[in-house]
Structures are given as structure tokens and as C-alpha cells.
Image (cartoon, rainbow, N blue to C red):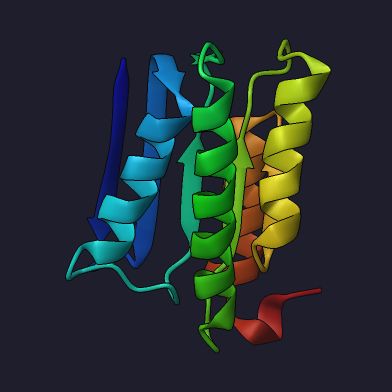
Length: 137
């Protein structure tokens, strides 16, 4: 299991990557660590790559606690007046329940979209966050 984040202040992008088997608590801890990082800026766009993870759902109570915590973090991000766009990339072979959980997170978070293509997520972030306003069609 690997859950990591990187804040690139020079390129103005935050990236999150998770691989292997993870539980909701690990994702929740990552989100907490990210938001507590002194370099974290909600105004930066965020790319979250969840391809290749398997969610361990053995502890349902832990899942519920994590959902409440992630919802609170999403609302905190949303309350920031200049929050950046967030693209979440998932595997296209996930089951409906897992897709629904990620969709829920995207709905709770402001300016967030879910993608099953890494390339499409990058293009979406680029168009929303990095392309000069005059060039947007």
C-alpha cells in the first residue's frame, strides 16, 4: 500500500497518488496530513490518482468515520473562496459502490470531477486552471 501526496508550489499543482490495498482510514489520514501541510494551498488545482487501488472494506465503522471526516475536509476546502479544481482518476473496472463513493466525494467538494482516464483528467485541469482566460473557448 502506498498513499502519497506532493505539493508543487513552483508549478502550482497538488498531486495525490494511491496504489495497492488501502482502507478508508489511510485515505482519511492522507487528506488530514495534506491539509495540515504548511505548503498546502486550497487554491492550487489537485490531481488525485486512485488507479490501481483496492479498498479494504473490512471495518465498516471505520468507513463511516472516514466518510464523515472526508466530508468535513471537503467542506473546509469548499469554504475557501479561491479553491482550485480537483480531478479524481479512478479505474474503469471498479464496482458501482466504490464509484459511487468517489462520485459522492466529488459532489461534496467544490469544482471536482471524476474521470476514468488520466489523460482526460489532465486536459480538464489544464483547461480550467492553466490555460489563459482569453484562450478558453
